[in-house]
Image 1: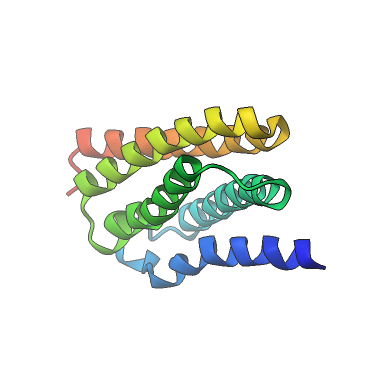
Image 2: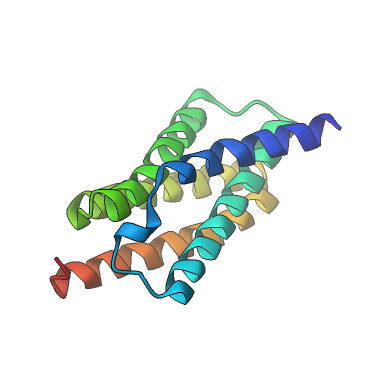
Length: 144
C-alpha cells in the first residue's frame, strides 16, 4: 500500500501543473490535435513518474540526481505554460532544451542505478525531442 501511495503522489505532483495551463488559447483549436497532445503529455508524465518511483522506492539517490530531477520537474510544466498560456515559442524552446539536457543526465544516471527504470526514460526522451523539433518547426514557420 505504501508503494502505491508513493507512486500516486509522484504522479500527482507531475500532473498537478497541468491544471494551470489554458489549452484553448492556442492555435490547436482542432479537438483531435489538442487531445493527442494531452494524451502524449500524460504518457510522458507516467513514464517519468514510473522511473522516479522505481529509483526512490529502492534506494536513496545521490544529491546531484535529486537536484537534476527537481530541475526537470520544475521546467517541465514551464514549457507548456510558455507554449500555451504565454504563446512564447522562444521561452518554450529554451525550456525544452533544458528538459532535454536534464533528461540526458537522468537517463545516464538512472542507467547506473536501475537499468529497468532507465528504459522508462527512453520514451520520455523521445517525446521531449519530438516536442522540441515541433517548436523549432513552428519558429521556422513564424506562427506568430
